[in-house]
Image (cartoon, rainbow, N blue to C red; front, side, top):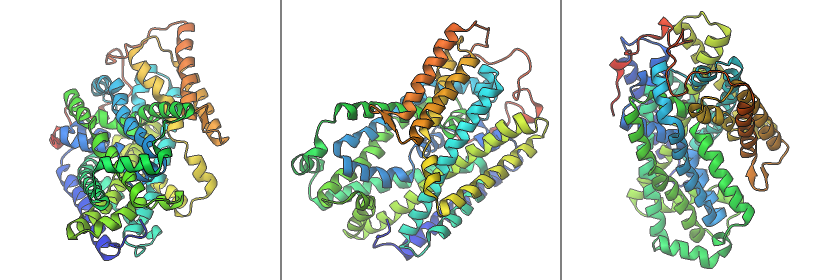
Length: 520
């Protein structure tokens, strides 16, 4: 991206326009929220009133970052047809949602959940499980946010041809992100997701069309070239490669579905029907987004043969240069594409920051540090805590030490360890808190230990999936072996006795938030 011939002033203009639109959305949402109670439900979940269109785009933005565009095409270039797995695992994520999202939405609405750990607290009644899960989520979110900050700096610097330095680029858009997130919460984040989602979809479509124009043929010609010119990239994968493919489907399909910011969008849906309709549309997006990015990488094999691994990382910038030179229309669309990529990175970062702040507010401060604090106080502490965490991550992203970066790559490997408690615990009443906690801790230790020891896979199976397998066995067998204690039906609201947060008068009435409806 640092060699774009259309970089410089045009890039600065486009990025400035995106920044102004984001700030305008935050300001508009803040005006719409006047007179609406400033509580965690309103700020973190948009009053639980996201409609089909807005929910669809914010789910889309949750799964598709700018990194998917600039990172997946080089992978397709290097791996060839084997990288079709990216389309598969982005599709499996929707299956991961469907394992638990509609059922969890019903329970969350009845019990007024705010964060993912509210479900664990409701289901198992174990502070240890809730706290450990919250720490795993904060780690994964910190990792994800660090990735987005680094990508943000490189993306903006590249689009402007170095006119805006890496560090200045990060600071400028972090300020923009903080401003509109602070003003409008999830509602502002969701509406910026709509903007960046449209920009990405249009830009990728034009990029593929321009690439096909450059090779002077269709997709069949591009695929045929790979088979004849580089048959290794069209070869049948090895047995271990096939196992790795299946392992990746499990790791990403389940791991991405239980991202905290993804679960909060499940909570924020206006209704179960709205959630199902949005997920049904999401099922098509891997073919419309990831498959198109895969095609960009395949087309580039013919356009730029022999690139090294390092050179291939600049692939999207290279092809965008050539597409921009076709005619003025493609020139303008490529500028908009890269502006959309940057906006997508920022939009993903704001979702992560919002989820991070909510966990600090609800699961750390409200549950453990200051249980008697008022709603506005806890919300403010969460906002400030998110800003402090962001400042710390900015320091890492400024000039990241290699060791810390290597540690922070532990994302899905650790996060996926909460999946048995979320998915199995949602359907199986007998699942016990003790075995769940032990399984979660052992799974995290195995996954983290393998990754840090430089053993990312075991016979093709990813460290996170190895840990998840052991975790699940411990949780299931342990629940069968230990004496069974009656637990609330995982599919029903907890109506017996006081509820930790649902009965708190500071949370407001179930009907609050309707004034900020977003039907989409």
